[in-house]
Structure formats: C-alpha cells, structure tokens
Image (cartoon, rainbow, N blue to C red; front, side):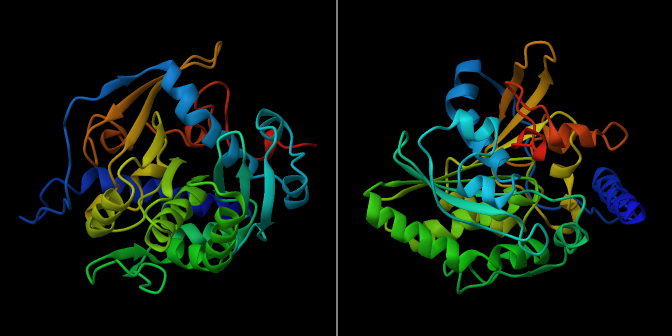
Length: 320
C-alpha cells in the first residue's frame, strides 16, 4: 500500500513536471494547448469568502464522513455548522464509488449534492484519478456535449456510477420541496465529479431551477471544448485552488486538458487566524494563479488545507 501511494504521488508530480516544462517548444513543436490568461487577478473580500464559499466547503468536508454519520447528520463540526439539513440519500464504497450525499438545505432553500475526494487508503479510489485517458462525453448524460467534447475517462466513469441516483433524487427533492436552487460541491476527485454532475443537472433540469457549483482542489476534467461547455452551462462556476497545491495542474494542459473559468486562488493563509488571502483569476488557465505554479515548489498539504476559516478536507473533522 505504501508503494501504491508513493507511486500515485510521484505520478502526480511527474505529470505536473511535464505540464510545467511542455509549453517550451521541443524539436520545433509547441506542446502548449488551449487558452491561457495573464490578466491581473482581483482581490476577494473576507466577507465574500465567508458568504459564498464557507457553506459549500462545509458540505464538501462532510462528504468525507462515514455514511451512517452523514445520514443522521451527526458528522462532527461540518454537520454542526450546518443545522437543519435533511439528508435525502447517501452512499458510496470509498472506492469505485466515492462517498456522496444529496440533501435539503432549508436555510438556503437549496438542494445540495456533495462528493467525497480521493481516499488515499483505497487503491480503487486512487485508480479513478490516474486513469486519465480522454474519451468522448457520454451523450446520454450530457446530451448538449458536441462531438469535440472529451473527458477524463476515470472521472467520467466515476460520475456515471451515481448519475442516475443523483438526477432522480434531485428531481424528486425539487418537486417535493418547491425549492428552485441546486448546489453541487466537492473536493479533489469529488470536485471533478461535482463539475460533471453540475453540467448533467443543468442540461436535465428546467431553466427556472438555478444550478450552481463551488468546488475545491479541482483537477482538470476535460479538454478545451469541455471547459467552454461548462463555462456556458454554469457561468458562475467557482473552483478554489490553494497556494501551490499540485492537483489543479494535472492532468497536464499540454495533453489538451483545460480548466473552466472561475478560479479563486488562495495566495496565503494566516495560520493564527485562519484567514485567507484570495484572488479571482480572470479567464482560464491564468498564469498568475495555480496554472503558473512551479513544479519545483508544490505542497500536497495545501491540497488538504487549511483553505480558509480553518477548513481542511478529509475525515479528521468527522465525529470520532
């Protein structure tokens, strides 16, 4: 198991190294792919962080907790921070099907879908990440995906294992509650699955339902056509990156994987107060944000956190 984890981490580092090196022409060939931005980022206020990002982060963190705790909404600090939530469905095996849940959030009149990230203790969970061959989008789940849309094979397969249940439960919950808002969130692998769920739900639900998505530590999920499609479907999509976390830099950009717009990049975290300095990064693949990070200076700890207001991801915050 130690060797598997080491190989997985080294694979991430190696891919990040290729991504960093590839834009320089090699043998006269430029391996850079897709759009890049160098527009100046703008500051995000502490009030916006707390108002717009903290609640999705708590839901994403809760997805790491055992299913029985989530079903009873007794999962520790994340559940305590989100009172009145009613869980409608929860499941997963921490492997091929990472943990997930669908819930009513009556305080926000929102249906929430949250997905767990990679469990480093489970080989199959890691395999979902490293299977990064591009494949055609599943047009049953993504009927508006054109022929050019390509997706990370592992992420699409993982999302497909829960797609029918997620869609059916969300539709039923909207009808029963009368709510008109859906939030989809997740961290790491869960962020990738959440971005796919958000696209699926936007295509499947009526236009009077607002679908939003806020995710954390998002790896690249598909090609530039996928990024363009998500930008169109979820124009306020937000993906939060933390300092020099290497995960948002993989799979490499030069393999025609591209992030959507909406990056919010944490440049610094005050370990004493938990406050984060964050900027909004215009365009996609902004070189002033995570896409410009050096492979020689990465921290997998930044992938876990803390991100802001003391929130880290993983099962440490769950009820013991």
